[in-house]
Every structure is written in structure tokens, then in C-alpha cells.
Length: 531
Image (cartoon, rainbow, N blue to C red; front, side):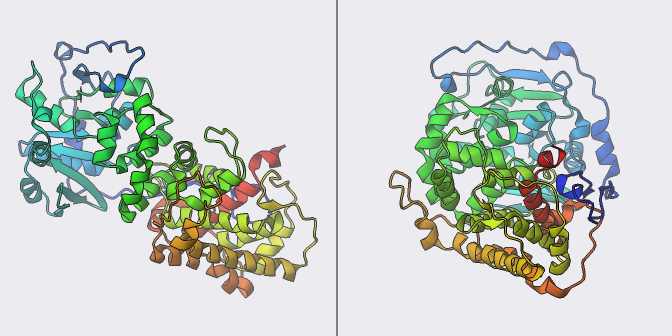
């Protein structure tokens, strides 16, 4: 997918950056079942008397996390959900299974996003079919996961996750007998759906949508919490986080992306169970951190991680930076670290993510400046050289002609008035590139990371390193062009448009392009230029 943007780096200098930016629309690939896509879009007659929406009870004071919820069956049309928002690969899977006579539902965060009229990151499907029956229904499908297996259905270049009621039922069967009791007054269909919803993490993720009957089932109070902009565990938070501490990170990610707050009990146990993250698999940590930082809500995620005392465990070096600058838990101020990720967020979205090497490179770049602040001119030349992946000589020429003011509130930018010669400036840019590479090695060194907060004895001690050596090498290669490009001719870019497919795959030209924009726009913010 290639989508054009209009961003500060693209438009603030009279020098040639091949801008303004223009839209380029990539032709959508045709699905293997056009008829399947179209059938879901057909209208379904809904009788209003079939939907009885119980009024939400007024909850005042006390612990509202443990009160039983009224079950609701809601008309998706009245909620403003449009099936046209469902991605084509998901429609294909829904229709194929439906035509074979199975029940199918959209579940989890995608239903929440459809209610909020947001673009879902992905679509999860729940079906009455056994996983082996799902396998037989699709030519490209495999079962993944041992503990809780699901199907990955390949439709064109997309993967749609499909789970089965039977698998969830077996998982539920391992719970205590009291958890399995059928609530009074419900039929078997409601019981099966309710049982599935009770296995999910947060109430706002506990909605179930039948796109054919146009019904949204709410057994856990999800709609009430969406209306209140609240993230709340379905079961008691202490039990939920003890079962799966990764829910802590998912909660942070959801709250950051939606701008929601946590319920009182959930908030308390986020802090209480923070140390449990040290036991989480590093691959899982990286996955959850990537969801936070690569999908357009990185700044809000970092603020929440800091607020709840999780940043000290996950990113001790960055936590040390905040502590050393007197950044309070609920601080509304900004700094260079948060500003860099705010600039990144402007270019990304849930359906337009970046590869993890981009946000890792931003962490390394910032830490290099923390260790040794640099002149704004050096940073500008560095960002331009990386952005183009071309001639360092011409990047320096461009930087020396910048006349707009730079950000002066960041401690990482030295306030030098030194007049660099061209060769001196080129040497400083190469030194900065080498410094960023050196900092990357720190981010993957457990001994160095473990010492980040040693001068703050009240802080939890963590040697968490979830950035793999292979990823750090990929990030290092991003900056090789700065040295190699010293005598190369300037490489013209594609008119400033972003190729999001290449960005998500981590293709270096695209990652360098966005890295340069983010750095430049942070140091030379557009609002200063307009002033």
C-alpha cells in the first residue's frame, strides 16, 4: 500500500526534496472469491423486536469490576457498524464458512473498533466448525499453536485467524467447575457464546458480532465500558494478570491507542503485577512492544508505561532518561524522546504500521544524543543523509542552507554557535552515525541495561533485553550509507510518498526515508517555521 502524506520534512526548505507529496494508489489485489465478498454486503432483514437492549445500570462507588453484567443483544446497524468496513480477506473466510453451514462471528478488538468506527488492525473469526473442517474449507490453511490451536487462513497476501468454539470449550473446561456453571435463564446458544467471551481479556474486547444476522452480543458489559472510555478486565484483574501477564501490555496498548483510562481495580493490579513481565518470553515482549510503538500510538504508550512503572522493566535506559530529567509519572510535558515518537505517530496508523527496526533506530539515535548532545546542524545533516541514503557531501550542503529555527528546549541539542567547515560537518555526521551504532550494542547488552537505574535504588532492577542481535544488525545497516555515501551522488527519492508495504517489511530505503523525516521534523518542527 502506498499512501502520500504532507509532513513538515517534506515542505520546509526550498531545496529539492521532490515535494510536495502526491497520492499514489496501488491497485487492490483481487480475492480468490469475489462472490464470497459480495454476499456479505447483501442486506439482511432485521426485525427490531428481536433486539431487547437492557439499559445500563448506574454504577456509583465501590468496585465495579466484579459486578455481574446484563446480557445484551444489539442491532449492529443501530450501532453504526457497516460491513463495508470489514476487510476483504475476512469477508472471504466468513462467507466460505457460512455457506458450509457453520456459525461465524467476528470477535475481539475488531468488533470494538467497528463500534468506534476505527480501522481494525486485524480481524479474528470464531466459528462452530472444528479446526480440521476449517482446514478442508480453504486451500491455503494451517493449524498453529499447541496449547490453544487456531487456524491461519491465507487469502491473497493476508492471514486471517480463525478459532473454534470447540477449542475454546476445551480450554474453558480446564477451569474450575464454578467457572463452568451455566447462568440461570440462558439457552444453550447464549451459554456457548458467553463461555467464549469470558475467556477474553478486557470487556471492550469481549463483544461478539454476527455480520449476517447483524447482531452484536455483549455478555460482559463491553458496550458500557466503550461508552465510558474504560479498560476493565472481564474477570478480577488479579486473576486475569496472574493467568497471562501479557494482558498488562495489551491493556496499555489498547488504552494508548484509544485514549481510554483504566478502571480502578485494573489500574491497581497493572502496577501490582509489573514484575511478572520479567518472566514473559522475550519474543512475546518484542511483539507487544511492536504493537505499541509501530502502529501510530507510540508516544501515548510510552507515557502509560512510565505512568504505571513498566518502562523501568521494559526499557531501563529510557526510564533512566526520564528520571534524570525529573519527569513525573503523570507529567504532561514533553521531551525529545516523546517528541520523536510523536513525530513517528503522525506517519503511522493501525493499518499502516512500520517495521520494528524503525522504532529501535529511534531509540538508539536518541540514546546517542543523551550520551553526547549534538549541534542542530549536525543532526539536520545526519537526518538528510539517512533520509536519502545518498551523498553525505550534498546532504551537508543542504543542511548548511537551512534558515528556519530549530527546537531549543531539548537537552540533547547543544547550543553551539560554531561555524563548521564542510569537511568538519561531514566528519561530525559520521561520528554521530558511529555513535548510534555503538548505542545499539548497549540496547542489546544485558549488563549495561541492568546498570541503567542502579543510581535509583527505589526503581526495580531489570536486565530486560528483547531486541534481538539480528534486529540490531539490521538497524546498524541503516546507517552504513552515511559513511559509504561520502562521495556518492545525491539519490533522488520518489516524490515524498510513503510505500507502507515496504515500510512494514523493513526495506531499508523506506525505513531510512521515514527515519530522516522523523528526526528532522522533531528538531525543526513545522510550527517554529510558520511562526
